[in-house]
Image (cartoon, rainbow, N blue to C red):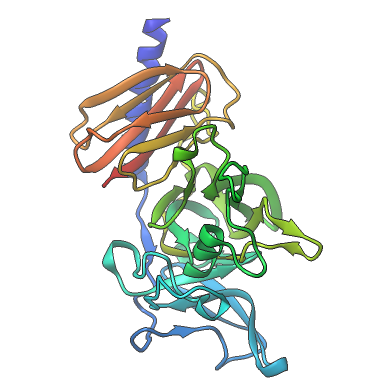
Length: 332
């Protein structure tokens, strides 16, 4: 068994190396889009259907001019820096009050927003993107408002959650393949582990394989007669395409994925292996130099204390019988 696990560990390392070698990247940072300071674009200047582009991606937008005008669908872009004001008038601010890595611009998405790949990225693999809550949704979940509940409820024990599901189109078909990310999760037995995302987190999307477009679907534990009560907004940045097709087709590699959250993290990371449906797995964490800093056998989702780790980038490997998966996180 140990010999077999060692083989998969080596395969994981080779897979990372081969994948990086095979792909060039293009980043949609939104810095190519012009904005005045502390402002946003929501399509009001181009109503009834518009879009904007950054990197090798197109972001559709629909602004409805009726009833005084409102942003009805798709994407906006922003450099708003208000992390304090609650309510729908602040729907264009990211909770970190800045773009990823202290950049200025970022994109704001709504329910069922779509990203269309363009140029060299069309039909290719997406590396991933950074995501966070908008201030509007964050403060609504933190404190509650006239329309939505405070997550956790009065006691703090309500198992609330707010989830982003990313689905892919390929060759005109909306596939079942998806990646999920919890923008808030209060389902833990220990309330100290409950969280609402307030920083930029990296989501790895390579497991979706070759992609033409993405669809972003929000869901929440807080629903009413007219649908979801939690404000249906989120923010993304550094949407990164690899601009290359999926080249690695080794039959011994399982392309299911696992999630790490929060990411970046300070004290604890949650490793979600619920999609793998396999026992007898090993988790291994490596620092940027390749030195092993943590290893453990796991059968279920795992919470790992990283408070003693040095700040920086870490690689996480999950391996076992016919499984070889890689992910990464940042220790703040």
